[in-house]
Image (cartoon, rainbow, N blue to C red; front, top):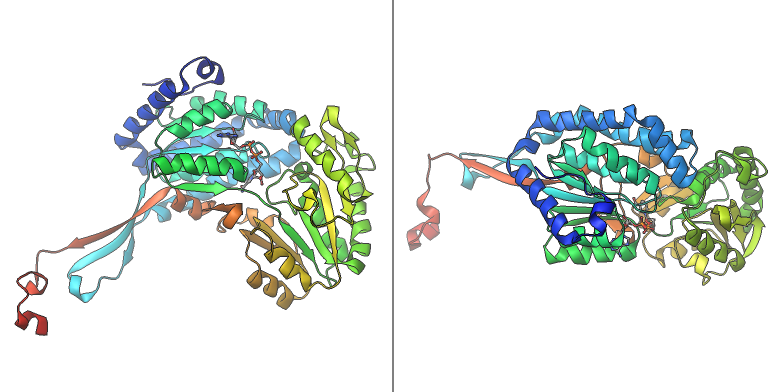
Length: 467
Ligand code: NAD
């Protein structure tokens, strides 16, 4: 069998293409053996993945702390328990997911049975991002396993501690004939993308998303792209300001704002901004103290380059609160920005950090147009006590996901699909939706020999046509 894990060291000096081709060829041969399609094997692999996480939980929390200064409790909530929850849900539901689904058969085809039968796709590639380096790599692996595939996971090189730990542990727990972790950056990912895969799930920015899709197109490989964008957060005048402020502060400043579904900017009237801004300040102080840099619970920006990128936004409005930056320590304070022009870069690019512009409108009815003039976001948030108003935004504004009166909580519902639309992505996963992403739904009809009507066979005589 193949050496399953291609470390960045071994890959670096060699011909990436050749060794990657050998890796994928080995996985493909194993897929053909039929082992991965067996339900008992899938279950066992899912249990092993769970064991890998629970037996090494402390090490994962440590690695996530090193990569992003995440507090252990936060890492547990947003990464470790998120993946374990996905595994448990898949184990509970797998039996029903794999069942062929019977559908009706029209009279002309009877007697027959028609059904839809899920089957694994083959060998799939999962490319993760750095902001939730464990969850975004392993949560897609869960449905890939559940659906009976072989898989290669490629962690983000920007979260090296988590990447190294997954690369070290994965082959120890999972069947290394079926799964591999390939570490590395652009050259290694490029070599992976040259291979022919049966599906690619990529999480990250749209720029690389296009590279992935182009590479996949060469082999007619389908893709799921989990991208980002500017997720608006609309706060109506009738919102419960105290609860709204707490939930926005949590949604925006968890992981120092480096969350693809974090509210990117606020949309509200001037009057609401006057009440909301101090309320958010109070909540942030309650969570991280007066000096967030001292707080063990407040994260860091992934690297200096990104910290510099964020610091440049601070000059594009009036810093209403926060604004401190310590580039050497990749620290950017939770910041509220007011009086930002809509043409400023901070309102054109995805912020992906702890800076929250407050866009003040004369009338909240302008919010709908404001959102719809921009690319379709990954998430849309509406805070209001008026459910008709919430429904209006939900029906008029397209977004990958949406939440009324909270941020990000839809992630907790296993039965909701997670994915973008338009520039925020294509396809989705989580729960059964993930199983569907990594399966082909084969249409099957089983016919009987009896009742072979002559009608459809030539010669088509006038008598037959009259029938
Ligand atoms: P990133 O830098 O981690 O890149 C993602 C992956 O692409 C990495 O594995 C990286 O090695 C690879 N990559 C980078 N350049 C490449 C190239 N030239 N060719 C081939 N592969 C390459 O991630 P990022 O883009 O900085 O992530 C931030 C973006 O991801 C944001 O837009 C965010 O909204 C989005 N995101 C989306 C989700 C989601 O689930 N929808 C989750 C997290 C992040």
